[in-house]
Length: 189
Image (cartoon, rainbow, N blue to C red; front, side, top):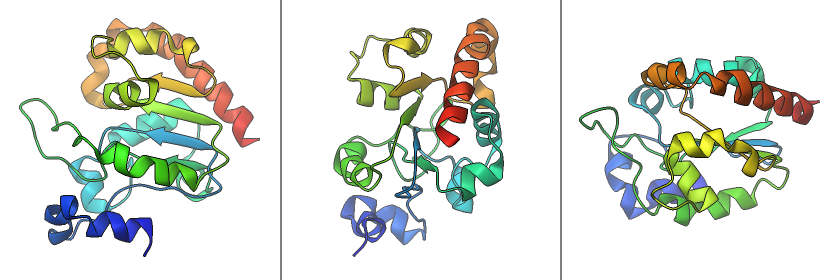
């Protein structure tokens, strides 16, 4: 049984499996860049294609790569903090379920020995991978990205919902994105 099949068969995921939903992730053994996000949105869950929405378009722009490179090169892995769309909350989507990353990420990471950069999209991934105190904010973490560089790069979620954050924090696209693009180019060459 593959990890994909094990995730689908996990009793914790029965509700999603019964809906006909598959876990959304990609872990090619040739991957050099790992993107850890929150959880798939509904559009992504229904299409089965990760980052297949406006957020994905902006993410690929920030990475400086085409859709073809992102999806077809085998150089990008995507492992969200939860493999399934968690449902709607008052503002945005519900958070990823607890325990998913702890249970499955180590096994998936073991399949990808060539990861050179892990991009941590949003506070859930950043707190988990960087072992941050709950009081540490996303803005503080992203602004101090060089502390975690070059193994990790914490970024804000590329969702259009974050346009206000991006406007208030213009340093992100002026400083962080060029560093990200430069590092991605180095890794992909």
